[in-house]
Length: 234
Image 1 (spheres, rainbow, N blue to C red):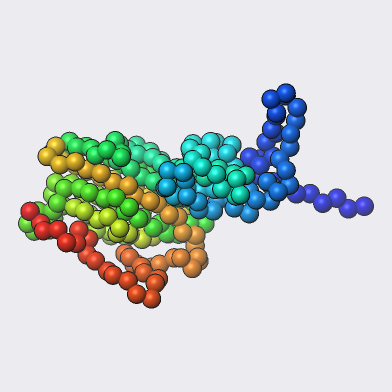
Image 2 (cartoon, one colour):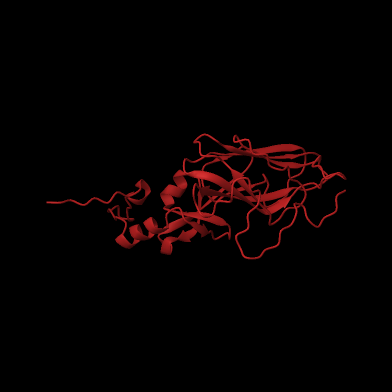
C-alpha cells in the first residue's frame, strides 16, 4: 500500500472550534487558498501594504490582521514598527513614533532589519518622508536619515522631502548581515514624518537591482529626480 502525506504549516492546521465546542477542521478550499497566497503581498483595509498569512501565523509574528486575502480564507497582515523595533518580515512599514501625526524635538529613532538566508537586497520606498531641509551647502546638518549595513556599501545621508523616492540596499549573501535604519532629528522648529516600506528581495530574483545601484527603474520610461528635488535649500 502507499500513503500520501500533505505537510502543512502549523498555522494552517490549528484546530478550530465552533461555539458549541465541536471540532471544525479547515476546509480543503481554505487550505488550498492559503497555501497558494501564503507570504504574498496584499493590501490591508487601511490601504497599506501587507502580507497574506493565516491569522494565527500573523499574530505569532507580532503582526496585526487588517482585512482578508486568499479569497477571504486568510488575513492581510500589517507589520508596522517604529523606534527601537526589530523585524525580519517582508512588507514591513517603518514609521515615526507619533505617525500619522508628526514628531518634533531632538531624538534618535533606530530600527533593525534582520537578514534572512534567501534575501540579498532591500528596497526602501519612501511613501512619506519629511525632515528638516539641508543647509546652504546641501548637507543634512539638522536632521538625517541613515542606512547602516555590514557589507561596506556607502549610502547617502538623506533629509528634506523625499516622498515617492526609493533606495536599494545590498545585504550580501551571508546570514548575519542586519541593516539598521536611523533617523536623527535636532530641534523642535519643524514637524517630522516618515513612512518607509521595506521590501525584501530574494537572491537571484528578477526584481534585484544590479549590484551597487542606488535606484533602479524597470519601466520603459520614467522620471528620475535628485533627492529633495524641487525645494530650495535654506
